[in-house]
Length: 222
Image (cartoon, rainbow, N blue to C red; front, top):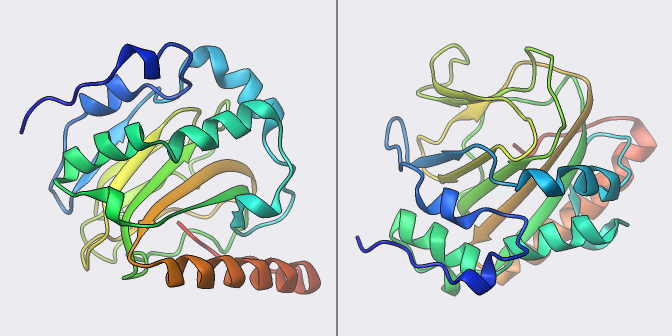
């Protein structure tokens, strides 16, 4: 596969380090995935944390439902960029331009989160980007699993600033983590099979968020 070419004009003031992503190894055990450390350029970390939406309950929230500052807006915008799609697509040998995209935000982890799952069949590629300045807990470190056993893992990712996971959804793409309750900032970005799925998910997240506020409960989205 030819080397990905990234124009200097797209990286001069960019928050995301696409060169680091392009150089990442594609793992195939137990499924196709990439791990990238420091994917967010360090000089932007403080501004991103300051501009992150205020989320004090569990669940995943569509970007359109949140208020946030300019640094977070730029970070989100770069995930939607054609350059990001091109690099990820070449890694997985997919033309991602044909798929709709969606982004959700998490700011709080509940003790019930982290249940083992593979992601919905409507998701083609899942991107998880963590934005926590530090992490001292053994919980909520995402594990990429070989089975439905949380101890049977190929990789464990600490959810600190700039740590990135990208994986191709399959019947073997099991992942989950140990329990944790507290602040945990992350973005989930997906390429999905249809625009209809994207609209249904947006509606579902809106309804789910309302119900959680009423019931004081939380769900899990990865």
